Image 1 (cartoon, rainbow, N blue to C red):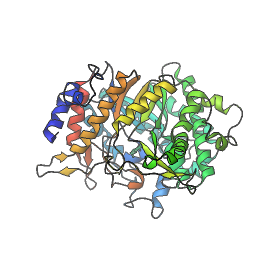
Image 2 (cartoon, protein in one colour):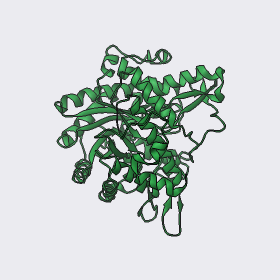
Image 3 (cartoon, rainbow, N blue to C red):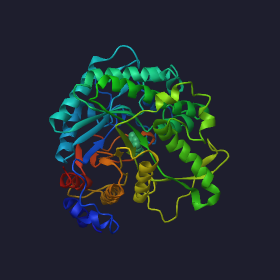
Length: 466
Ligand code: IFM
Protein backbone atom coordinates (compact mmCIF):
# COMPACT_ATOMS: atom_id res chain seq x y z
CA UNK A 1 0.00 0.00 0.00
CA UNK A 2 1.46 3.39 -0.89
CA UNK A 3 1.16 6.67 0.91
CA UNK A 4 -1.93 7.83 -0.99
CA UNK A 5 -3.75 4.60 -0.16
CA UNK A 6 -2.93 5.00 3.51
CA UNK A 7 -4.32 8.51 3.59
CA UNK A 8 -7.39 7.42 1.67
CA UNK A 9 -7.92 4.62 4.16
CA UNK A 10 -8.14 7.20 6.89
CA UNK A 11 -10.58 9.33 4.97
CA UNK A 12 -12.75 6.31 4.22
CA UNK A 13 -12.70 5.32 7.89
CA UNK A 14 -13.66 1.79 8.75
CA UNK A 15 -15.20 1.18 5.38
CA UNK A 16 -11.88 1.60 3.60
CA UNK A 17 -8.60 -0.24 3.70
CA UNK A 18 -8.94 -0.86 7.41
CA UNK A 19 -11.48 -3.52 6.63
CA UNK A 20 -9.11 -5.13 4.20
CA UNK A 21 -6.75 -5.77 7.11
CA UNK A 22 -9.28 -7.97 8.90
CA UNK A 23 -9.52 -11.70 8.33
CA UNK A 24 -12.69 -12.83 6.57
CA UNK A 25 -15.61 -13.11 8.96
CA UNK A 26 -14.08 -10.92 11.64
CA UNK A 27 -15.51 -7.61 10.44
CA UNK A 28 -18.10 -5.98 12.66
CA UNK A 29 -19.89 -3.36 10.56
CA UNK A 30 -18.39 -0.43 12.47
CA UNK A 31 -16.98 0.49 15.84
CA UNK A 32 -19.91 0.45 18.26
CA UNK A 33 -21.75 3.70 18.96
CA UNK A 34 -19.98 5.69 21.65
CA UNK A 35 -16.59 4.14 20.94
CA UNK A 36 -14.24 6.79 22.26
CA UNK A 37 -11.30 8.24 20.32
CA UNK A 38 -8.76 10.15 22.34
CA UNK A 39 -5.15 10.85 23.09
CA UNK A 40 -2.90 10.52 26.14
CA UNK A 41 0.00 12.57 27.48
CA UNK A 42 1.82 12.76 30.80
CA UNK A 43 2.80 15.79 32.85
CA UNK A 44 6.57 15.38 32.90
CA UNK A 45 6.70 14.57 29.20
CA UNK A 46 4.81 17.62 27.95
CA UNK A 47 4.23 20.35 30.52
CA UNK A 48 7.60 21.91 31.33
CA UNK A 49 8.17 23.62 34.64
CA UNK A 50 5.66 26.40 33.96
CA UNK A 51 5.38 28.99 36.71
CA UNK A 52 6.82 26.74 39.36
CA UNK A 53 6.98 23.07 40.11
CA UNK A 54 8.95 21.33 42.83
CA UNK A 55 11.42 18.65 41.77
CA UNK A 56 10.16 15.23 40.89
CA UNK A 57 12.36 12.14 40.82
CA UNK A 58 12.67 12.64 37.06
CA UNK A 59 14.17 16.12 37.48
CA UNK A 60 16.77 14.64 39.77
CA UNK A 61 17.38 11.56 37.60
CA UNK A 62 17.92 13.73 34.50
CA UNK A 63 20.72 15.58 36.30
CA UNK A 64 22.70 12.37 36.81
CA UNK A 65 25.37 11.73 34.18
CA UNK A 66 24.56 9.09 31.58
CA UNK A 67 20.86 8.69 32.32
CA UNK A 68 19.25 10.48 29.32
CA UNK A 69 20.36 9.82 25.74
CA UNK A 70 20.54 13.48 24.70
CA UNK A 71 21.26 14.87 28.21
CA UNK A 72 17.91 16.65 28.12
CA UNK A 73 15.16 16.99 30.72
CA UNK A 74 11.54 18.04 31.12
CA UNK A 75 12.21 21.67 32.07
CA UNK A 76 10.59 22.93 28.87
CA UNK A 77 9.24 19.69 27.35
CA UNK A 78 6.46 20.89 24.99
CA UNK A 79 5.60 23.89 27.15
CA UNK A 80 2.10 22.44 27.32
CA UNK A 81 1.78 24.36 30.59
CA UNK A 82 1.45 27.55 28.54
CA UNK A 83 0.34 26.14 25.19
CA UNK A 84 -2.42 23.76 26.31
CA UNK A 85 -5.17 25.82 24.61
CA UNK A 86 -3.45 25.33 21.24
CA UNK A 87 -2.89 21.63 21.96
CA UNK A 88 -6.48 21.06 22.95
CA UNK A 89 -7.61 22.90 19.81
CA UNK A 90 -5.48 20.44 17.80
CA UNK A 91 -7.23 17.53 19.53
CA UNK A 92 -10.64 19.02 18.84
CA UNK A 93 -9.78 19.64 15.18
CA UNK A 94 -8.86 15.96 14.85
CA UNK A 95 -12.29 15.02 16.19
CA UNK A 96 -10.95 13.53 19.44
CA UNK A 97 -13.44 13.32 22.29
CA UNK A 98 -11.20 12.44 25.25
CA UNK A 99 -7.92 13.73 26.60
CA UNK A 100 -6.07 11.68 29.20
CA UNK A 101 -3.39 13.70 30.96
CA UNK A 102 -1.61 13.23 34.26
CA UNK A 103 -1.30 15.51 37.25
CA UNK A 104 2.20 16.46 38.28
CA UNK A 105 2.08 15.53 41.97
CA UNK A 106 4.96 17.91 42.87
CA UNK A 107 3.22 20.77 41.06
CA UNK A 108 0.13 20.52 43.26
CA UNK A 109 1.87 19.29 46.42
CA UNK A 110 5.50 20.45 46.45
CA UNK A 111 6.26 18.37 49.55
CA UNK A 112 4.13 15.47 48.34
CA UNK A 113 1.86 15.86 51.36
CA UNK A 114 0.51 18.81 53.34
CA UNK A 115 0.15 22.27 51.87
CA UNK A 116 -1.07 22.38 48.24
CA UNK A 117 0.18 24.94 45.74
CA UNK A 118 -2.79 27.05 44.60
CA UNK A 119 -1.15 27.95 41.29
CA UNK A 120 -0.55 24.30 40.49
CA UNK A 121 -4.15 23.37 41.25
CA UNK A 122 -5.38 26.29 39.17
CA UNK A 123 -3.43 25.07 36.14
CA UNK A 124 -5.30 21.76 36.13
CA UNK A 125 -8.59 23.53 36.69
CA UNK A 126 -7.99 25.66 33.60
CA UNK A 127 -6.88 22.62 31.61
CA UNK A 128 -10.07 20.77 32.51
CA UNK A 129 -12.27 23.76 31.67
CA UNK A 130 -10.57 24.24 28.31
CA UNK A 131 -10.99 20.58 27.39
CA UNK A 132 -14.67 20.57 28.38
CA UNK A 133 -15.30 23.74 26.41
CA UNK A 134 -13.80 22.05 23.34
CA UNK A 135 -16.15 19.06 23.75
CA UNK A 136 -13.32 16.85 25.03
CA UNK A 137 -13.73 14.74 28.16
CA UNK A 138 -10.83 15.09 30.60
CA UNK A 139 -9.45 11.77 31.88
CA UNK A 140 -7.25 12.49 34.88
CA UNK A 141 -4.37 10.16 35.69
CA UNK A 142 -2.97 10.67 39.18
CA UNK A 143 0.46 9.15 38.70
CA UNK A 144 2.57 8.92 35.59
CA UNK A 145 6.01 8.46 37.15
CA UNK A 146 6.93 11.94 38.44
CA UNK A 147 6.97 11.29 42.19
CA UNK A 148 7.78 14.38 44.28
CA UNK A 149 11.47 14.19 45.20
CA UNK A 150 10.42 15.18 48.72
CA UNK A 151 8.63 11.82 48.99
CA UNK A 152 11.53 9.94 47.46
CA UNK A 153 13.62 11.41 50.27
CA UNK A 154 11.19 9.75 52.67
CA UNK A 155 11.52 6.36 50.96
CA UNK A 156 9.33 6.79 47.86
CA UNK A 157 7.63 3.64 46.57
CA UNK A 158 9.86 1.60 48.85
CA UNK A 159 8.04 3.01 51.86
CA UNK A 160 4.69 1.52 52.87
CA UNK A 161 3.39 4.89 54.11
CA UNK A 162 3.17 6.01 50.50
CA UNK A 163 -0.22 4.27 50.23
CA UNK A 164 -1.63 6.86 52.63
CA UNK A 165 0.20 9.78 50.99
CA UNK A 166 -1.20 8.75 47.62
CA UNK A 167 -4.78 8.41 48.89
CA UNK A 168 -4.58 11.88 50.47
CA UNK A 169 -3.32 13.34 47.20
CA UNK A 170 -6.16 11.57 45.33
CA UNK A 171 -8.70 13.14 47.71
CA UNK A 172 -7.18 16.57 47.19
CA UNK A 173 -7.53 16.29 43.42
CA UNK A 174 -11.08 14.99 43.72
CA UNK A 175 -11.98 18.02 45.86
CA UNK A 176 -10.54 20.39 43.25
CA UNK A 177 -11.63 18.78 40.00
CA UNK A 178 -14.38 16.36 41.00
CA UNK A 179 -17.16 18.79 40.15
CA UNK A 180 -16.10 18.54 36.47
CA UNK A 181 -14.04 15.36 36.13
CA UNK A 182 -15.67 11.95 36.33
CA UNK A 183 -12.88 9.78 34.83
CA UNK A 184 -10.07 9.01 37.27
CA UNK A 185 -7.05 6.80 36.67
CA UNK A 186 -4.94 5.81 39.65
CA UNK A 187 -1.59 4.73 38.16
CA UNK A 188 0.04 4.54 34.78
CA UNK A 189 2.08 1.38 34.16
CA UNK A 190 3.19 0.41 37.68
CA UNK A 191 5.24 -2.43 36.19
CA UNK A 192 7.48 0.09 34.46
CA UNK A 193 7.94 2.03 37.71
CA UNK A 194 8.82 -1.15 39.62
CA UNK A 195 10.97 -2.89 37.02
CA UNK A 196 12.63 -0.07 35.07
CA UNK A 197 12.82 2.39 37.95
CA UNK A 198 13.65 0.15 40.90
CA UNK A 199 14.95 -3.11 39.41
CA UNK A 200 16.93 -2.24 36.29
CA UNK A 201 17.84 1.39 37.04
CA UNK A 202 16.92 2.69 33.60
CA UNK A 203 14.23 5.06 34.87
CA UNK A 204 13.97 7.30 37.93
CA UNK A 205 14.77 6.83 40.74
CA UNK A 206 17.47 4.65 39.18
CA UNK A 207 17.70 1.73 41.62
CA UNK A 208 19.04 -1.67 40.62
CA UNK A 209 17.64 -3.82 43.37
CA UNK A 210 15.34 -6.81 43.41
CA UNK A 211 14.14 -5.97 46.92
CA UNK A 212 13.29 -2.39 45.97
CA UNK A 213 11.56 -3.59 42.81
CA UNK A 214 9.19 -5.86 44.72
CA UNK A 215 8.59 -3.21 47.37
CA UNK A 216 7.63 -0.74 44.61
CA UNK A 217 5.33 -3.38 43.11
CA UNK A 218 3.45 -4.07 46.31
CA UNK A 219 3.27 -0.48 47.54
CA UNK A 220 1.91 0.72 44.20
CA UNK A 221 -0.76 -1.98 44.32
CA UNK A 222 -1.62 -0.98 47.87
CA UNK A 223 -1.65 2.75 47.07
CA UNK A 224 -3.90 2.10 44.11
CA UNK A 225 -6.35 0.15 46.24
CA UNK A 226 -6.43 2.84 48.90
CA UNK A 227 -6.92 5.63 46.35
CA UNK A 228 -9.70 3.69 44.63
CA UNK A 229 -11.55 3.41 47.96
CA UNK A 230 -10.95 7.08 48.72
CA UNK A 231 -12.26 8.24 45.36
CA UNK A 232 -15.21 5.91 45.43
CA UNK A 233 -16.22 7.51 48.72
CA UNK A 234 -15.51 11.02 47.40
CA UNK A 235 -17.37 10.59 44.12
CA UNK A 236 -20.74 9.62 45.54
CA UNK A 237 -21.34 7.26 42.60
CA UNK A 238 -20.49 9.85 39.95
CA UNK A 239 -16.87 8.90 39.36
CA UNK A 240 -15.69 6.27 36.88
CA UNK A 241 -12.54 4.79 38.35
CA UNK A 242 -9.79 2.79 36.70
CA UNK A 243 -6.10 2.16 36.40
CA UNK A 244 -3.69 1.62 33.54
CA UNK A 245 -1.30 -1.27 32.99
CA UNK A 246 1.38 -1.80 30.38
CA UNK A 247 0.48 -5.28 29.19
CA UNK A 248 2.56 -7.36 26.84
CA UNK A 249 2.28 -11.02 25.92
CA UNK A 250 5.63 -12.59 26.78
CA UNK A 251 7.22 -15.12 24.40
CA UNK A 252 10.22 -17.42 24.85
CA UNK A 253 13.34 -15.82 23.35
CA UNK A 254 14.48 -17.42 20.11
CA UNK A 255 11.26 -19.47 20.18
CA UNK A 256 13.12 -21.98 22.35
CA UNK A 257 11.30 -24.32 24.71
CA UNK A 258 14.20 -23.87 27.13
CA UNK A 259 13.10 -20.23 27.51
CA UNK A 260 9.46 -20.98 28.33
CA UNK A 261 9.98 -20.83 32.12
CA UNK A 262 11.75 -17.47 31.69
CA UNK A 263 8.81 -16.16 29.66
CA UNK A 264 6.36 -17.39 32.31
CA UNK A 265 8.41 -15.73 35.05
CA UNK A 266 8.56 -12.40 33.26
CA UNK A 267 4.85 -12.58 32.44
CA UNK A 268 4.17 -13.07 36.15
CA UNK A 269 6.27 -10.02 37.03
CA UNK A 270 5.33 -7.66 34.21
CA UNK A 271 1.65 -8.48 33.73
CA UNK A 272 0.15 -10.66 36.43
CA UNK A 273 1.75 -9.12 39.50
CA UNK A 274 -0.58 -6.18 38.83
CA UNK A 275 -3.61 -7.89 37.26
CA UNK A 276 -4.05 -10.80 39.68
CA UNK A 277 -4.09 -8.85 42.96
CA UNK A 278 -6.49 -6.27 41.50
CA UNK A 279 -8.95 -8.75 40.00
CA UNK A 280 -8.38 -11.89 42.07
CA UNK A 281 -6.89 -10.70 45.35
CA UNK A 282 -3.65 -12.67 45.23
CA UNK A 283 -0.19 -12.55 43.66
CA UNK A 284 0.69 -15.09 40.97
CA UNK A 285 2.36 -18.18 42.41
CA UNK A 286 5.72 -17.29 40.82
CA UNK A 287 5.70 -13.87 42.53
CA UNK A 288 4.28 -15.03 45.85
CA UNK A 289 7.66 -15.83 47.48
CA UNK A 290 8.92 -12.29 46.76
CA UNK A 291 5.68 -10.56 47.76
CA UNK A 292 5.01 -12.52 50.95
CA UNK A 293 7.42 -10.59 53.23
CA UNK A 294 5.76 -7.32 52.14
CA UNK A 295 2.12 -8.30 52.41
CA UNK A 296 0.43 -7.46 55.72
CA UNK A 297 -2.96 -8.73 56.88
CA UNK A 298 -5.72 -6.92 54.99
CA UNK A 299 -3.50 -5.72 52.13
CA UNK A 300 -4.86 -8.06 49.51
CA UNK A 301 -8.44 -7.23 50.40
CA UNK A 302 -7.57 -3.56 50.04
CA UNK A 303 -5.92 -4.12 46.67
CA UNK A 304 -8.74 -6.22 45.21
CA UNK A 305 -11.17 -3.60 44.02
CA UNK A 306 -14.00 -3.31 41.58
CA UNK A 307 -12.96 -0.90 38.83
CA UNK A 308 -15.11 0.73 36.19
CA UNK A 309 -12.49 0.25 33.48
CA UNK A 310 -9.03 -1.10 32.86
CA UNK A 311 -6.67 0.97 30.73
CA UNK A 312 -4.40 -1.13 28.54
CA UNK A 313 -1.22 0.37 27.12
CA UNK A 314 -0.01 -1.83 24.29
CA UNK A 315 3.00 -1.49 22.01
CA UNK A 316 4.16 -5.04 21.27
CA UNK A 317 5.04 -8.40 22.84
CA UNK A 318 8.19 -9.13 24.84
CA UNK A 319 10.78 -11.89 24.47
CA UNK A 320 12.62 -13.41 27.43
CA UNK A 321 15.39 -15.93 27.91
CA UNK A 322 16.80 -17.71 30.93
CA UNK A 323 19.70 -15.81 32.51
CA UNK A 324 20.80 -16.58 36.07
CA UNK A 325 22.34 -13.09 36.26
CA UNK A 326 19.00 -11.40 35.41
CA UNK A 327 16.95 -9.65 38.10
CA UNK A 328 14.60 -12.63 38.40
CA UNK A 329 16.71 -15.17 36.48
CA UNK A 330 15.59 -13.90 33.06
CA UNK A 331 16.71 -11.34 30.51
CA UNK A 332 15.71 -9.87 27.16
CA UNK A 333 15.57 -12.61 24.54
CA UNK A 334 15.71 -12.73 20.76
CA UNK A 335 12.58 -11.98 18.75
CA UNK A 336 11.92 -13.80 15.47
CA UNK A 337 14.37 -12.68 12.77
CA UNK A 338 11.60 -11.61 10.39
CA UNK A 339 9.72 -9.55 13.01
CA UNK A 340 8.98 -5.98 11.88
CA UNK A 341 10.29 -3.33 14.29
CA UNK A 342 9.65 0.32 15.04
CA UNK A 343 12.53 2.78 15.24
CA UNK A 344 12.64 1.95 18.99
CA UNK A 345 13.50 -1.62 17.98
CA UNK A 346 10.15 -2.73 19.44
CA UNK A 347 8.36 -5.62 17.70
CA UNK A 348 5.29 -4.77 15.63
CA UNK A 349 2.67 -7.42 16.29
CA UNK A 350 -0.96 -6.30 16.16
CA UNK A 351 -2.23 -9.87 16.50
CA UNK A 352 -0.64 -10.00 19.97
CA UNK A 353 -2.99 -7.16 20.95
CA UNK A 354 -5.98 -9.30 20.01
CA UNK A 355 -4.50 -12.23 21.93
CA UNK A 356 -3.94 -10.01 24.97
CA UNK A 357 -7.43 -8.52 24.97
CA UNK A 358 -9.09 -11.92 24.54
CA UNK A 359 -7.01 -13.28 27.41
CA UNK A 360 -8.10 -10.40 29.65
CA UNK A 361 -11.69 -11.20 28.72
CA UNK A 362 -11.24 -14.83 29.75
CA UNK A 363 -9.07 -14.53 32.84
CA UNK A 364 -10.51 -11.44 34.45
CA UNK A 365 -14.24 -11.57 33.79
CA UNK A 366 -14.48 -9.51 30.61
CA UNK A 367 -13.62 -6.15 32.16
CA UNK A 368 -14.47 -2.89 30.41
CA UNK A 369 -11.29 -1.91 28.61
CA UNK A 370 -9.92 1.18 26.93
CA UNK A 371 -6.69 1.01 24.98
CA UNK A 372 -5.18 4.01 26.73
CA UNK A 373 -1.89 4.05 24.81
CA UNK A 374 -0.84 2.73 21.44
CA UNK A 375 1.49 4.31 18.94
CA UNK A 376 5.02 4.20 17.63
CA UNK A 377 8.27 6.01 17.08
CA UNK A 378 9.33 6.10 13.46
CA UNK A 379 11.66 8.61 11.85
CA UNK A 380 9.58 11.27 10.10
CA UNK A 381 10.54 12.94 6.85
CA UNK A 382 9.71 16.58 6.26
CA UNK A 383 9.23 17.35 2.56
CA UNK A 384 10.14 20.60 0.84
CA UNK A 385 6.42 21.51 1.02
CA UNK A 386 6.63 21.27 4.84
CA UNK A 387 4.49 18.10 5.02
CA UNK A 388 5.69 15.61 7.61
CA UNK A 389 5.56 12.17 6.05
CA UNK A 390 5.18 9.43 8.65
CA UNK A 391 3.54 6.70 6.61
CA UNK A 392 5.15 3.98 8.76
CA UNK A 393 3.27 5.33 11.78
CA UNK A 394 0.02 5.36 9.79
CA UNK A 395 0.53 1.70 8.87
CA UNK A 396 1.24 0.83 12.52
CA UNK A 397 -1.90 2.64 13.68
CA UNK A 398 -4.04 1.16 10.94
CA UNK A 399 -3.02 -2.38 11.86
CA UNK A 400 -3.51 -1.87 15.60
CA UNK A 401 -6.89 -0.19 15.19
CA UNK A 402 -7.89 -3.11 12.98
CA UNK A 403 -6.74 -5.40 15.82
CA UNK A 404 -9.09 -3.53 18.17
CA UNK A 405 -11.94 -4.30 15.80
CA UNK A 406 -11.01 -7.95 15.76
CA UNK A 407 -11.03 -7.97 19.56
CA UNK A 408 -14.51 -6.43 19.51
CA UNK A 409 -15.63 -9.17 17.16
CA UNK A 410 -14.39 -11.65 19.80
CA UNK A 411 -16.65 -10.10 22.43
CA UNK A 412 -14.01 -8.04 24.26
CA UNK A 413 -15.68 -5.13 26.06
CA UNK A 414 -13.44 -2.55 24.42
CA UNK A 415 -14.81 0.98 24.62
CA UNK A 416 -12.17 3.29 23.22
CA UNK A 417 -8.73 3.93 21.78
CA UNK A 418 -6.31 6.65 22.92
CA UNK A 419 -3.35 7.28 20.68
CA UNK A 420 0.13 7.76 22.16
CA UNK A 421 0.48 10.55 21.47
CA UNK A 422 -0.56 13.95 20.19
CA UNK A 423 2.85 15.70 20.51
CA UNK A 424 6.47 14.67 20.06
CA UNK A 425 7.69 14.91 23.64
CA UNK A 426 10.24 13.91 26.28
CA UNK A 427 10.55 10.14 25.90
CA UNK A 428 12.15 9.40 29.29
CA UNK A 429 15.66 7.91 29.01
CA UNK A 430 15.57 8.58 25.24
CA UNK A 431 15.08 12.30 25.82
CA UNK A 432 13.80 13.98 22.66
CA UNK A 433 15.46 11.46 20.34
CA UNK A 434 12.40 9.18 20.17
CA UNK A 435 9.27 10.83 18.84
CA UNK A 436 5.84 9.22 19.15
CA UNK A 437 3.72 12.28 18.25
CA UNK A 438 1.26 12.78 15.42
CA UNK A 439 2.19 16.45 15.73
CA UNK A 440 5.81 17.54 15.39
CA UNK A 441 7.15 20.01 17.94
CA UNK A 442 9.99 22.28 16.87
CA UNK A 443 12.37 22.21 19.85
CA UNK A 444 13.65 25.72 19.20
CA UNK A 445 10.37 27.53 18.54
CA UNK A 446 7.82 25.10 20.05
CA UNK A 447 5.86 25.44 16.80
CA UNK A 448 3.43 22.55 16.26
CA UNK A 449 3.21 20.91 12.81
CA UNK A 450 0.65 18.15 12.32
CA UNK A 451 2.06 15.10 10.55
CA UNK A 452 0.23 13.07 7.93
CA UNK A 453 -0.72 10.62 10.69
CA UNK A 454 -2.60 13.45 12.41
CA UNK A 455 -4.86 13.86 9.37
CA UNK A 456 -5.21 10.10 9.03
CA UNK A 457 -6.09 9.48 12.67
CA UNK A 458 -8.48 12.43 12.72
CA UNK A 459 -10.27 11.02 9.69
CA UNK A 460 -10.62 7.64 11.40
CA UNK A 461 -11.92 9.24 14.60
CA UNK A 462 -14.43 11.41 12.75
CA UNK A 463 -15.61 8.60 10.45
CA UNK A 464 -16.28 6.41 13.48
CA UNK A 465 -17.76 9.02 15.78
CA UNK A 466 -20.92 8.06 17.59
O1 IFM B 1 6.17 7.57 26.55
C1 IFM B 1 5.77 6.38 27.17
C2 IFM B 1 4.68 6.65 28.18
O2 IFM B 1 5.06 7.59 29.12
C3 IFM B 1 4.31 5.38 28.90
N1 IFM B 1 4.03 4.32 27.97
C4 IFM B 1 4.96 4.09 26.89
C5 IFM B 1 5.26 5.38 26.17
C6 IFM B 1 6.25 5.12 25.02
O3 IFM B 1 7.45 4.62 25.52
